Amino acid sequence: MPGVYGSAEPLILLLLALGVEALYGGASTIERWLPRPRRLMAIFVSKFDGALNRSSTSTAVSVFNGMVSVLLLTGMFAALGYAFSFITRNAPFLWLIEVIVIAFCLDYRAHQVRLRRVRKALALKSLVTARGELYPLVSALFRITDLNRLDESQLAAASVGGMARGFVTGFAAPSLWYGLLGLPGLFVQQAVHQGARFYRQRHLQAPQEKGFSKVFLGFDRVFLVLPDAISALTFICASLFVPGTSLGQAFARCWRGRHMADAALGGALKLDPNMPSETNWRKELERGNLVVLIAGFIGIGLIAGAVLLRFTI
Image: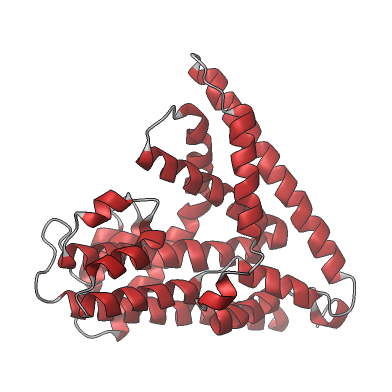
């Protein structure tokens, strides 16, 4: 293996990071104290917002300031990722630290654990607990007051959306951008995503001037286009292995939805977003969870296949 003790093969580090996240992800006692890079990114997003997002009558000025904020944020974390990667790749065994950092940027098992709590709370008719567990997964789409108005079956439908978005943002996007560009690419994608989450949540609570935030939202959409499409494809493939799902609807809907992965998963489960099931939501959640789990195995298999291909060429 190339590099210092194999440290120059990023896809192997990614596989190790997925294994680490599979061990600790979702453990509340660990999650509370993890020094996640996203927390540092969120602090800088807030600082840049306070310094650059001033009220202005000119939309062009607001967009320009937003662009400056994005460039400062991404430049800072790209440089940090490059420096960190350079150090860990050129010293024996420090690549183990890089594995931990990558794991901190993944949220695959953590989403699964939280969704399991949602399903358990719904089964026990504890809607308050279900809303509390679901909110972190859909906070960019719903206000807490919106969730409070949803009934049992509607909460189940929202959980399906949380499954798809969690897979895209917690597994597909970090894995793809790390695999393509290493730690600099991973840090840039995560920083932009944190900025987009910050403004989506703020607009849901109190709509404000959007010129500045549109830059973050636009960059975030660019970074998620390919992971979203890959996730939709893996959901379609995974639906072949889950009884009661529809491959045809998954494929047809993914081209019509705003988010391909969400639409593909909803199509696979044959969900009607305008008329949530009143009786079969438990089966829908179980099937949706199986589709996402199998999609994760498919994704890991693709990464492992890329590693094998890398060493056979």
